[in-house]
Length: 284
Ligand SMILES: [Zn+2]
Image 1 (spheres, helix red, strand yellow):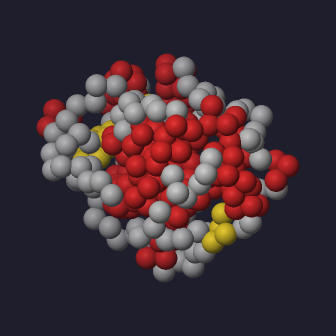
Image 2 (cartoon, protein in one colour):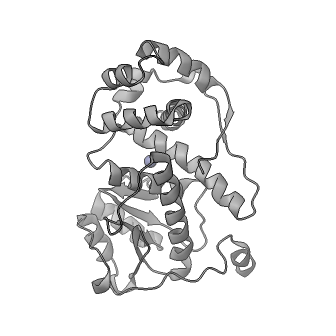
């Protein structure tokens, strides 16, 4: 599809320079990385940008990914008001192109079969073939996880990890498209009250519930949006406390004292907030 290629927002970019594996600035200690590179080892090429190292098959495929990855790094670092020192750890991104290789990798890594991408121990493994474009904010969502992991490597609650990744990537995707001349007005859709998962239940989940995946993502995003949009400094203090594994109620009451009398008051406000559609504010 030659014409489409010419029309892509990243057409005309200079290709990501290829670097020999032995000359990469950092190695990936993740055993899944080694497993990935063992699948048709002759196919893998390597390259790096300021915050990421890429393992890829085709530079046409990886070049726009590398541009988008650095773009999302800036968005997320700004949102978290943190910046990595120069020379700090880079995240590794493995870009598979052949579905058969990806299936082989899923078996080796014992990954969920539905997964088109997986974030594991700070590395990202994705399948992307030339004919397929990432839908909407998928890549930004995964990149947000990588960066959260870098700043909060002991882990944060699942709702916060997924909710933040959705929150930041939806806005970022819109800016990315607008910067390239696309009309983009993302919206965060309201959730009917009877479908809401009670906050205490949502916060106790260590992975998205298989029977309510969509509600889990939407509701987590809405909750992060409510907490982050009212006062950024307070939200970041809460994020730090939850990253040190403090219980939500204790941390929330201390940090949001004067804003909310109790977790029940938050839940009440959240129910109203979650029900309304809202436009996604631009994080840049
Ligand atoms: Zn996710």
